[in-house]
Length: 363
Image (cartoon, rainbow, N blue to C red; front, side, top):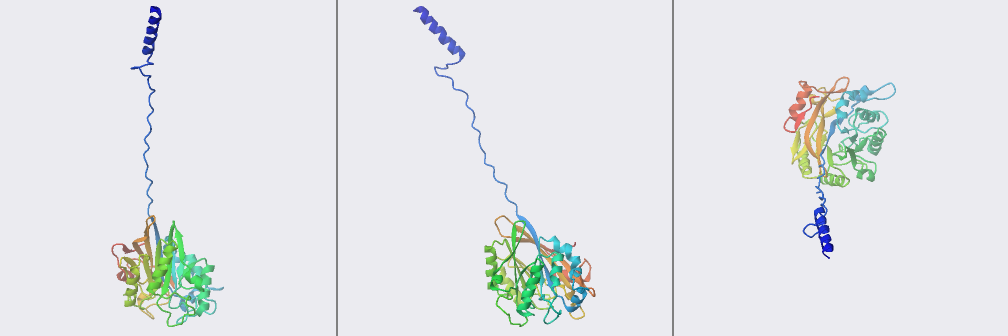
């Protein structure tokens, strides 16, 4: 019995020495530490930035049309060639077609008819779309509206401001660049007293209607809404009472990003109205007007470029504006960029100005 007891004691001592028991309990295996998961915040999206340019009146008087005449038709592209670098630099470029484009003998003031070849030159210069709402939109009636739209369609250009059907009137012109949708709306304050063939033939400027259209463009997905207006008093640099009234009413709408204008045939100021940038008048881009008939400043125009900032999920704002002064050289009717020190440059900059967020482009 003593031998058995001695054997048990020896066995127990060996087990303790081997570490299989500690304080009467089996030793637990070492625990593996559970890794701590740290949530990584997603990289915030950066605001998109892009440029939108709008130009002055394309107003081909008969001397301009004669310059564009070739042995086989008309070619306006050489008259606009020097503007290509400016126009093509913008992410989105809009032009303003003041006269109806229609086959047949060209006609000048007061009832214009411009060769449809102008549309091909617009495309070749780099514009993406055009406003067609002006006091001359219905110079050739409903047929002129239809032929103008057909010419722009053949050239692959967008258009807004006139239409051939109620459905066309409701269509919103949306251009997309860098994931941003830009809506372009266009209107005119009058038609030189000519009766409108159909209520959809040309957009007449009514602030309530413009605001409704801007809101509809937002519902269609527009991140920015640019409103183009054919308005003002001819040959007057300062905005008239009607321009100021319309600008104030439209600037109260959060749906509208910026307001652009033509018609005065001279440049007008660029100003903030109610927190919105308003380009009251871009002058003449292409015309026969000069000191021979009109103020010398009718040879002046500008390509105005809006620099937009579009935060993710938010509406676009205009960070700054740059404008390129232009002028029409006579007698060859070439549209050229004005240079600092030129008479045209000086006239334009004196009217348009230079301040925080606004200055002329020097290249």
